[in-house]
Image 1 (cartoon, rainbow, N blue to C red):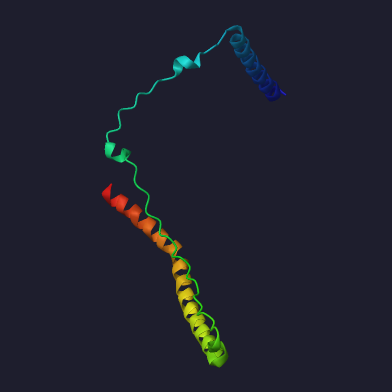
Image 2 (image 1 turned 180 degrees about the horizontal axis):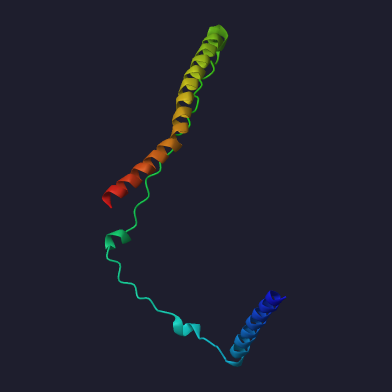
Amino acid sequence: MAEVGSLNAQLAATYDEIDSILSATLAVDDYVDLEQLRVVVEHPPFAHTDLEVLTPSPVRIATPPEPEIVEPEAPKGLAGVLGGKKKHAEALAAARAAFSVTHQAWQAAANAVPARQTTAGAKSVEVLRRSG
């Protein structure tokens, strides 16, 4: 019981101390003007005027224009009647085959453009790093 009484006495003393701090603080106007505590900073001038110039953007690599098929003209008049249709069909098949090869080459070139643009952009960044 003596130990409990001692602990209760310490607790009561702590409460009294807290109450006295609160009453002392509430009796005083503790207004602090925060604007008076602000510090105005003055930065030195920027010494590297060469870095103020904008770096031009890299030239974008354009996608080549898509090829168009050029079909041979259909035979007219007697040429269409005298075996011209067969020659026209052969010429048309040859034109379509040539177009297919050309179109596949164009497709490969068009698909490679984004990778080439990325590579060109990375090279321009590397040039900037070296020159800076």
